[in-house]
Structure formats: C-alpha cells, structure tokens
Length: 461
Image 1 (tube, rainbow, N blue to C red):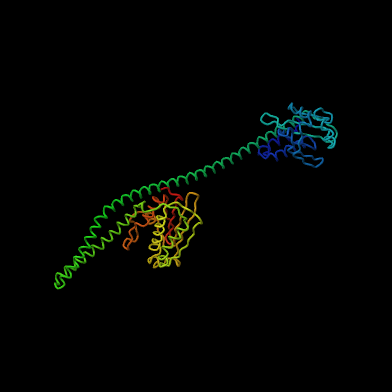
Image 2: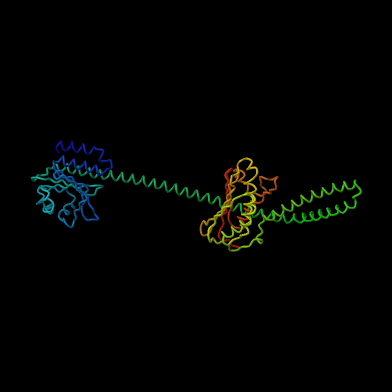
C-alpha cells in the first residue's frame, strides 16, 4: 500500500470520531478519507435492509455534482446479478463498470447518466457478518483499481464496522442508563406505594385496636354503671326522705333555737350530700351512654344531606346564642343505610364542644378568638362505599399533646368548669363501634380544629 494511503488510514483509524458512537460523523470522516485517498469524486455507504430485500444508502457524497443523497433503496429483485455478487461477500472491483457482469445492470439508469465509469464495492463486516458495502465510484475515463487501493478500501470498510460497534455500545449504555433510571423510578414509586400501604395498614390496625379497646371499655363501663346505679338510687331516695324529715322537725322545733341550729347544720349537710349524689347520678348516666346500647339506635335508610340539615336545626339555637356562623356543604341525594341517631349525637357533641372549648372567654381575652366565629360541616362521597364528614371550626385549636388524648375517657381541659371528659370518648365509640367507621382529629393552636368522620354508606345490622 502506498505510504500516502497508509498515513491517511492511520490518521482516520486513530480519530476519536470512529469510537465516539456518533455514526453520522464517523461515516462523513470515512467517506472523505476514501475520496481523498482514491482520488475519486463520489463515494457512498449502503447497508442491507432485510425487510425491503435490498440495500439502502445511508450517506453518499458526490463532489462532482455537489450532491448528498440518503435513503435511496436498491432492491434485489431489480438487480439480481449485482446482489448475487454481493452474496459471495467478496469485493467487486469493476474497472469497466458498464460491462462488468456484477454492475452492468446499473448502466442505463445509473452509470451513464452520472458519468460513472468504474466502481469498487467493498463489504462492510460487523460481528463476522456482512452488513453493507462501501461503494467507490469513479467519474471520467475508466480506471484500474490497483491492489493497494483495494486493500485501502477494505481497511476503510473495516473502520465502518468499528464505528457501528461504537454506536451499538453507546446505544446499549444509553439504554442501560434509561433502564436503570426507569428501574430506580419504579423502585421509588413502589417503595412509596408500599410505604403508603404500610401507613394505611398501621392506621387501620390502630383503628381496630382503638375500636376493640373502646368496645371492651364500653362494656365494662356499662356493667359498672349498672351496678353503681342501684346504690346511688337508694342514696337519692334516702337523702330525699331525710330532707323531708328535717323539714318536719324544723317546723316542730321552731321555738327551740339551740335544736333549730343543729337541725340547720344537718339540713346543709343533707343538701350537700344531695348535690353530690345528683352529680354522681349524672356521671353514671354519661357512663351508660358510652356503652352505646345498640337497642337504643335504629338502623334505617336516610338521605345524608337532609338529615344533617335536620340535626343542624336542633343545634342552631345554641349556635345563634354563641354568635357562631354555620356553613353547610352537603351532597345531593347521598343515601345511606346506617344509624342516624349516632350521627346526630356526634354532630351535636362536636357543636357543643366547639362552643365550650373552641370559642371561649379565655380565647377572647387572650385575643385568639376570631372576629367571626365559624363552623363548617361538609359531606363528601369518597367512593361508592364510603362517605367522609368534616366538622371544622376556626376557634382556639389544640396543641399536639391535647389532641392526642381527646378521645380518652375523662380527659378534659375544663375539669373545674363542669366538663366530664366523656363527650368525645362517646363520639369515638359511636363512630367506630356503631357506624363502623373512624373519627380523627386535626388541630393547630390558633387555627381551629377539624374532625374527620369516615364511615361506610351501608352498615350491616
């Protein structure tokens, strides 16, 4: 091989473009190498297209006509002798292309119009297989393709195979990166989904534990209340009888001031006993309510929006007295088969609690009470099986520690001002045991509280 061709081939083979994976630029470099090394004006790269049963031009540079052609297809059926020669996977060196057996089929439609007299097609091999040809075409007087030129063309064709391998490596790497990124995304999505599922399971587990605890506690409280109620009833009767006797004796001893003084002392003691027994009776009645006696609640079909409006009408007097605005947002024609009495008790208790705890004199004095006290009740169908009822206020709110304990029995922040700490405990028991749902609280100090009641549309008896 001439030293000029060897030098040119070495320069091209050392170029970073060959192994960079950019096949288009590598092909440009290879064709210009052929044009310069062989002193020709036209060269092209053709790759086999099995689907079209032919070879397709991927790049062709014609310096004589100043053209660049791509995506030209030569079909096997149109040029059988040429493709038969290609099937031998040997070089086609046609000094006289118009008369050579392998290329004469191109004479009238291709060679003569373009002025091509000589052709040399060299196989491109990749992974041991012939995948295309490098076509060198001479315009002008016929020329003879010398052995060193044929070897040069074959070496350049091998560089095409190398460039194809580099592109495949790049494609594999890009695909691997894409697959890794997709896999990482899928792992993140599935991890997030599993985390959400785990959180839901943990919440459900906690709700089940709470429901079982409340149900057990309700049964225990019901039994204790029943047992205590009898002696309390006797105490009430006996106290009342003693007070009556004191009244009789007071009238009989009106003249005896010393005895009257002792009697008045006894009367005050009995009055104190009577007041505390009355408080105990009220407490026992509240305890009995926590048992959620199913016999006192009726399972029936009702339209949720209409029923909420009925309940609201019963609590409006107190809200009006407290100057609390009420906003209703209820769906149309949302029918339920559940226990409306339990729902009414929950809404009534929540409204009473808002007036007692959210909008208080303490909050007003501290400047944390809103200018317009407001309660919002909203119902939403989550799906065909569940409904969510929101009860919101814009009152004083609760800190995290208070919110954590509000459903526990006897927990209250107003112990010395008449609260027993049983209202929200009863609501939670009604929500979980009777309505077969859940009751959750969200609150921020100074930003109000939200109670979220989730329950099934149909409750089985």
